[in-house]
Length: 256
Image (cartoon, rainbow, N blue to C red):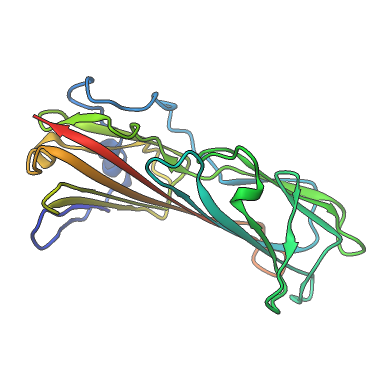
């Protein structure tokens, strides 16, 4: 469902037909002059977040949080991984890596692996992650996951957007939840919340010019939050779980 609010009680627009929702979200800007990122695949083919290479005999619970802030060249964030054997008991393996970097066993008494994003040189929001069990000991043969986090492709900081033009924000992947808030210098804001349990083929969010026109010209402050979850395999002790959240912020300029 998709809704917008402007200094008033929010109005929820319920869309019962996924086909109708897809058509709304995939509509193009009425004016192509607004700054938007390069177009994405127009086919809207379903995109999975994680793919397995090999045959894991353990359950992986993978969680990550990424933050991209204005004026900061590199994102921040962290990843946690918990691994369970066939009996459901949480355990450690011999060698577990993310992007080739060994993950660290937690020191807080919990049985999990940790890795801060700053330990992965050059990583940017939108990059693919490779999670590898290099040595699973007696529990599992080596296996890997290729993980593609969803994210919005946003105009750069200081980009100029216009009150008279729709703004189109493409996204990648099969987003489960998308939140976008755009605020002006007087704290008036428009907010969009998109949630779906089934992938509709939508590839972009269109912010209508009529909503932008209600904001004060000048500085705009943009905050987005994208969440992906995915379950792989049959229900049970070997079902793989992935949960990734990406937060992005920008400072734009609103012109007539």
